[in-house]
Amino acid sequence: MTDNVLKTLADNPVLTEAVKQVILKYFSNDKLTSDLADIELGQMVRARLVGLQAVNDAFAEIAWHKSTPKQEAKDNPAF
Image 1: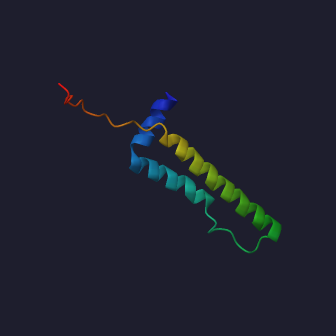
Image 2: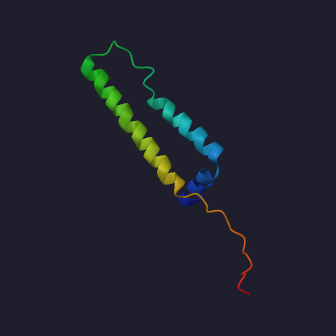
Image 3: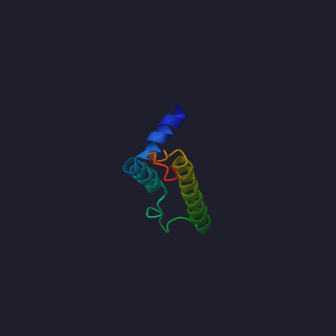
């Protein structure tokens, strides 16, 4: 069942990009402020970078579920 859902997601590039963008906005550094101590700020930046990499890795794995385009049978010119 999970494979079917991932295949559906992978086969629809608009849906894939929409889902990815919704997830990625939670890893934005735009909301970080300088009010944090240096160590806290560094930890948050590192955590967000690791999270971004994990999201990109997950979508690369989802791409493996994409259907291969069907090729039409061609006449063999040897006959």
